[in-house]
Length: 269
Image (tube, rainbow, N blue to C red; front, side):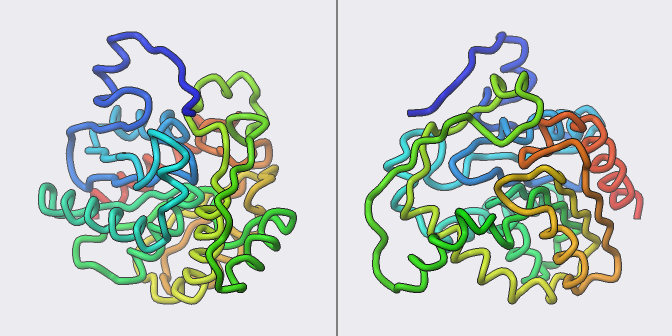
């Protein structure tokens, strides 16, 4: 079941496809954004709206298996998500020529894998709350299931809240599944291990953002990633008052400013 919140017609027109996806016409580079596991573009909405308001084209579609039923997500693999993300980015590149990949949590892994391929259209990379590693209480059992080499069970874990936020007032804006499909969650852990071995191939300008109070992906992920990327142009910032959904949390305005400034620099290059 997908938790949702009604919006005005004016907002739906502004955001293109309502509360699950966001599309905006604008100038290059197009920002192709990938949301987190079991979520939607609502997790990135304040940031994506700021980019659109700055005049940039934005393409933030639902990832494969998301947005309808958790049972559909249960059947997805990391390769399925990568293939769909690659197709989305390549389509945007055909329209605008240059693309900035922006990924949150699971989406960060997809953006990093695509960036490691060094496509000619890639202008830069933004990663938020990256999922290179998960908190041990979650990550260890998922890794063990992944290493077992057997198909994980068809189980679902109910989410107590819509997302990991310090700003509880923002929870009503988050649109996501109310439960995590375990088999698909194993694929996230598998993807994190795979991408860790690829990040040294990332050569484009990169902005790494993370919330210090993140209870899903430890903030140390940001430091590790900044040290291991192959790019000579890496900026990293940890937001002291924010949790996992850093683009929607207490410091969301500053997250948006940092990201818009970064994309604007790439546009002027």
